[in-house]
Length: 79
Image (cartoon, rainbow, N blue to C red):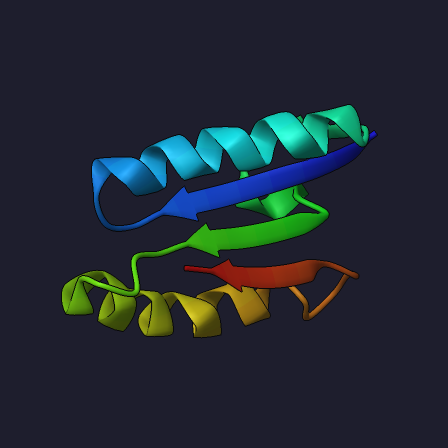
């Protein structure tokens, strides 16, 4: 089973959106994981309205890319 890891930044609406994303992808066979190192897909759900949330995600993108060093992993940014 494919594993999905999502980080959420921004307001409460983003938390709700993250749950919707998980529900949709669970129907496609993805399992939620809290361990980024075992994820096949890494997503960040950020807020495009709140500048602080948007700025924080850019620091995480480099860290997400480190996960691609020794394995295949898809990375997506939502917001």
